[in-house]
Image (tube, rainbow, N blue to C red):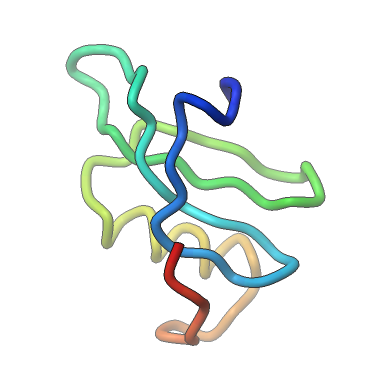
Length: 71
């Protein structure tokens, strides 16, 4: 993952991880990223906010639709 200045969190699950926009994404690649704070997972290139949120919830082991906090 890149430096935090190129990333803007949209949705956070406190103490677990976040997804957001990657302002330096490559052309033709989705602008959303997902990362867990413990370093086990970080990925970018998601095309929609919904894809990124679902991926975060999946890799965090949360039931679908759990609430986090807005970024």
